[in-house]
Image (cartoon, rainbow, N blue to C red; front, side, top):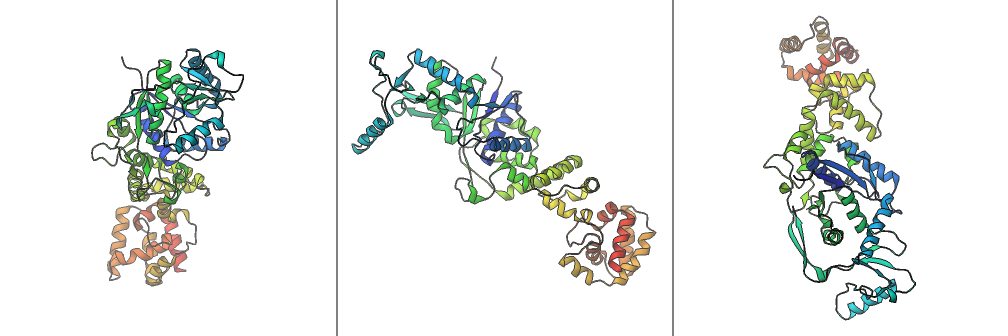
Length: 466
């Protein structure tokens, strides 16, 4: 019987949750959740100078926004340093590692000479096979004994078999002279102790896998399944960076992208399931597999992101959208909607969410609900209002006072009124938009009238006609 799947996301807390890291987390989450496995979170905070609680909080907030829930407690790599050192000492005791007394100056001098002679600068320590009786009373590091001939084959689910000659591997340091473990050791020990079965991470870690395998093999531990995924590039084909715009997950929340749309887009960024572009979380969990990940870098395309976000907004439940809009406003540092405004938006969501790609677009469509009387017209709306006489709108008011407030009746009344004026309803629509919303682009006039209600509609008409 195969072991339950355990994946992990292991970011360094030195900044925000990068969009590439968010995708790595998503792939690990989808793979575990689709197989009834566990998705674990480890903060790789061994770099004490660069690791900050603020950055850890930003990573957790970004994951929370994306809905990537993890199992168990968040693990701190730094707090496990004693366990990492214990493994290094075990390998030393078993003769699979050794004490190296070479100084930094000696190593630097060796590399200079090798470079000048056109030889490999890979350091070969003279202490590898030295007898303990010859050890000086001096600081030392603990190095692993790397295999010196043959090859190491990284069996990768994305990249295929990657072969590295062992004579290209150095005797990696496991424990520094001050007794602190190196990152490479910490990662392996943590993954083993956490029971990680699948390591899904960026392909910039591919070379690390060969060095980490030395530790697995020396300890007699099962090597996890490797899956090294290509990095994300910008539209210009270069590695995604600040010059391409927003990079942090929270920046996208603050710009008003819905989390479901972002999950869908990130899943498609480097992974595919046939020709499917739009899919739900449930479908993504069911479909996601490592063999769907491509070998080439994916390109970030904001238009595709917006297109998918629009489709997700359109199918989302109204109450869920209401809550996510409030979360967006908080993330963007904007004032929250009042309970009345929030209720109004939820009531009107049926005509607001269609074709809105982001929450700012949706809120712009909802402007007629969020503004207060007297309604201020923007330039286009004011022009539309100037093109119709006050008399027509004044004539309309008593007819609306006696109308039954249903869509069918309002449509019939306004079309008949337009015909009586010798025009079509389309000519009346622009000034009515201006009166009701102060905007030229709005939901349909009938929807606005129904959502605002009879009293408010008549009051806005009265304001406009004096």
